Image 1 (spheres, rainbow, N blue to C red):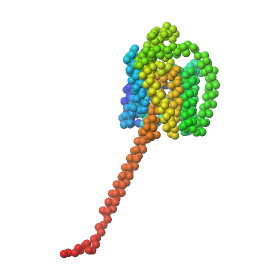
Image 2 (image 1 turned 90 degrees about the horizontal axis):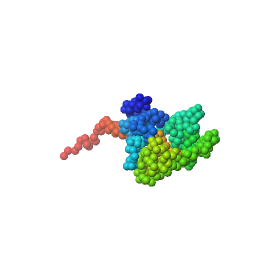
Image 3 (image 1 turned 90 degrees about the vertical axis):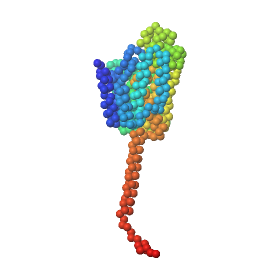
Image 4 (image 1 turned 30 degrees about the vertical axis):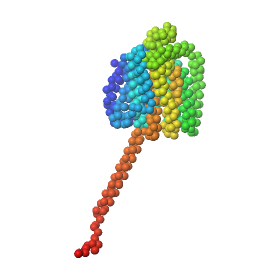
Length: 490
């Protein structure tokens, strides 16, 4: 029995006591939320794929159950048992349901129901994890615990990549991720968030130093990937953060931090410039040709099946057909569908697999949160919640631009992280709609305090009334006037 099988069995057995522990202790819930991102470091070792096909080139390779999923279920159950207001319909979730329906409708023309089920299962489990995280953040507004867990993931990934680059001699290093493009996209999404933290939130020197280290390591980890999309999009995301910070929350600290980061970044770029230039100038032509030919194949599928596509997670099967792929028998086409590569554009991939309906639903879902990150950033500009919104506005822009070149936003780790970031935005949208900057627990504490004060005031008033009545009873009877003591008789 493999190690991950043992972990899985222990997790299933332990989900009930874990739920009880989380229900009894809010501190344990905080630790749980901190650990959920950290499991990404050992994601493959703590997950099991049922009916898996490891050779298949798709966005999902099996019916996957991970330790993250089990912990998220325990977290949700604990919040329900504590009678916290667990919500399902956070802002934007309806758009995700529409996208999910489009993916289900693609089963009408799927070539393999089993493989399509892999991706649908992934979408369900990722939604459950996102629901647990979003509800916790909505109820507590404890963004720091969650982001600190992500910061630790970035640091661990950087040191693994550093070791691989300078001690093992590897050129492109992914860190903890399955591919360098995945690592680059992850850093492009989260790096701007920590830059925004430095620019827009008051912290002590220890925290400033820690978050500066996290941001710089995310930048260096991006350089280590030598992913052209990441190298181009990371600066764009950071630029958007700087523009929003100067526009909505300008102060002297912003200028100082920008200057320090700019100096450190310039030195890093100068050091890595020869390799970066070589990556762009001398990139193999075969890579560009492969992207072009797969894009043509995707367009052929969209033209043939424009409404519902060819079936989710079946690109590698359908793209192998001669009527779509005109390059079979060459380097760009493979007669074995198990090894067919994926079109390097998430939008063309979704368009081919789920049709224009699915692509439209995906774009609505994606850009709703980008628009809200900018709009809510203006709404929350005078609060401490401005920094995640400004950071995610930059990170999402970088990810969406990079997705025109790569499909990895649909990989498990990147998809999870994207959905979690959507959860942060959804929580702040909900707070704006409820006209409060406070979490549910803070509002509950205030209402409880007001209720107790009302009880104290009512008790004090009742005590005063009782004291007044007692004084009246204790007063002696006054004698009657003489004329009333001896009334006249007739």
